[in-house]
Amino acid sequence: ERVRVRSFKRWERENGKLENPIAEQRRYIEVERRVAHKYREIFALDPNKLTIGYVGRLVPEKFNLDGETIKECIKRGADVLIGGLIQKTDSRSEEIARRLSLLQKTLLKEKIAGDGNFIFIGSFDRDVRQAILAALDIIVLYSAQSTEASGFTEVPASICGALVLAPPYIDGE
Image (cartoon, rainbow, N blue to C red):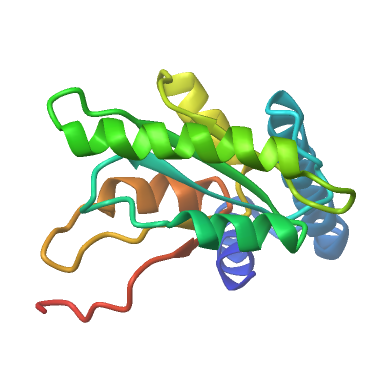
């Protein structure tokens, strides 16, 4: 919310005062909400539910969400959307994709009223990546501390309005 307010104030400085800044800010938030809803509908997700997800390569140093965490989110009513690019040169990547595909099938069979949805997309292009980012409320970037494997996803996720959850590593550690 603070980022929205700062960007709105910067826009106001550059473009002059608005006659009714509160109405303009509400309009901006409404447009942002409609865009997120549009992208959630593309993936058949409920636009009124919390959508948590990940976009990136499916390699152990970047993707560490386990099946139990995903199940817990689903059981609590959140939708989970994972766009994971399979790295063909790494057999571990293919194994992660296989486990996510199996989890998707299992959760679909076990689904009861009130549960969220789990969608795994194992191959996608740049447009789908942008649609996934726009559909997320929260993006989880749980990279290994020994790598800087999430930096290129943090910025686009923030631009799309998603809250970025990343490990609490202090710079230089």
